[in-house]
Amino acid sequence: MKIKTSNKWRNTIRIKSHLSEETSPKIITSLCNVIIRQLKRIKKKEEEGNLIDDHAWYVMDKLEESIDGFSFVLHIANGEIPESDWGEYEYKGGNEELNELFNECMKELYDMGDIRVRSIRGVVEKFIWVN
Image 1 (tube, rainbow, N blue to C red):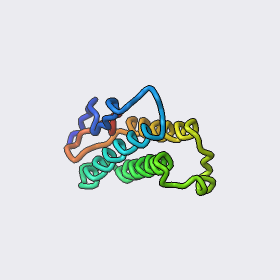
Image 2: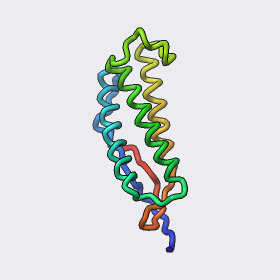
Image 3: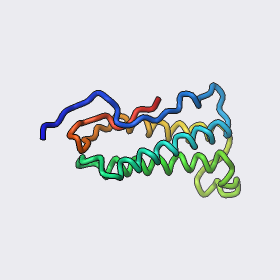
Image 4: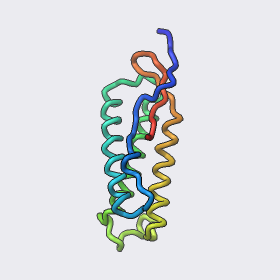
């Protein structure tokens, strides 16, 4: 099978309409919910065997790590992890640290965009685009 390379993105995470100039736990909660929902959709699609890449397991691990990271930020932002337990996670609290946690998750999500995968159609594509 001939391998073709595409400049298209295999998956897209759409968050632009949810972004805001201000940051608050409420906005971060909303963004995390949107991102998690889309990452889970992508993961389900890819689990159906659309990737034949030798490193498909790596891509699936990165997806799971990203879902876990955003889920943690979500639980902190919406208060599901009580302040008394923050020390277990080395989280000190405050909007600045919450923003840092969220931005770290976003950085890792953007890094997944650099991953190239080969589909069952034999096309090498960029894995994910965050828009």
